[in-house]
Length: 240
Image (tube, rainbow, N blue to C red; front, side):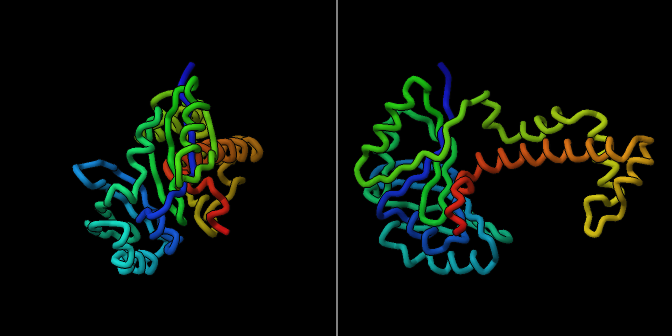
């Protein structure tokens, strides 16, 4: 038996982050910590907006959701991002209900009026845990994906670049670096595959194969990491 990585889409009533992102769908909140202290729940969020106007409108509108939160502080802003600290009455969260279940939350993001949780669950407890979660009152749950946890390195930010570098052959690395230095990835391109192939003394088809294979390895791993860090992006309906 091992651990399963599960991505969930959740909704529950009277939630500050759900209500605020429902009204501001071009803003995403990423939870950076959730704690219960005495008679309130406190949370830190990292806010990412699609434009400066979206960020400005969200921050200006914060006070309109005071019924769901005791206090909300904007700690700082930088370009299209901001950090937020919020304090909630316990009845507006499902903190106690959810954390009584047998799973380990890894990441939580909130977008377009829904929460997206990445959790780890013992394989033998998977069905039981999901059934209990779906039986909780006033909570709507949809399972977006269930995958095997390959290793704890799946959850380490630093290792993504290492994984990509280890997956590339030396020939692929050399062609990539040369293509980058000569402006192949710029638009309009400053060099061609023919010119790159000549500089390496290889056929055009071989050079193109190295480029495309390397690009696929890099893009695939970045998309996988993006999916895990911002699971709301899995929910394509959010863009409709």
